[in-house]
Length: 195
Ligand SMILES: [Zn+2]
Image 1: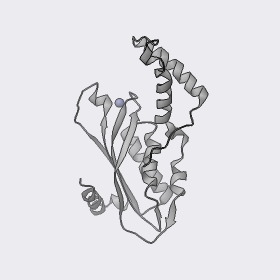
Image 2 (image 1 turned 45 degrees about the vertical axis):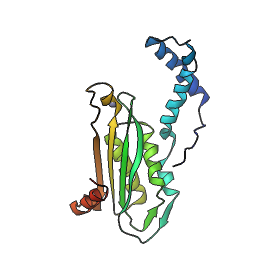
Image 3 (image 1 turned 180 degrees about the vertical axis):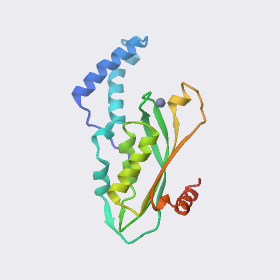
Image 4 (image 1 turned 90 degrees about the horizontal axis):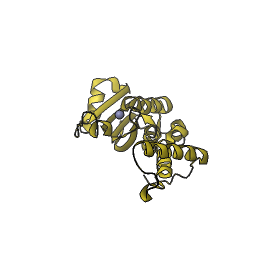
């Protein structure tokens, strides 16, 4: 996906968050007047707004903008969708891959819309379990396919950098609706994504 510049910074929010970051940096023991840190509170305020822009976006609208009548009724898979999100317990990143499959029921969706739906939900404070369910329910409720499956594999910085410091552990979550609740359909999908 092409990088789209995020320009809609709310001036008031940027200002409030900037001032709070300044205090946080000071509380952590740093000198906020140090050259390298002068613009850091503002940069951090903007970065956080970018990383949480999903609160202001509607994933249903995104799907509805590219739904087409089509008789194709085999499994459609988009795998290895890049994921970057923030864990809501520590506000630290978790990142990995999302694999999505659906079986159409009279209509298909533009393939680029599925990664966009992932981004809308990922750019909020999240837990991986809820993120999985939200992507699943959004596609299921909007496209109304015969079935939908979502698998997420992610590494959590809150586990890697602190806490148990397990650098190589990957957390996998999955959810299945409709036809994918049948074991053979589910297994076909898992085989196709190499699981
Ligand atoms: Zn965490």
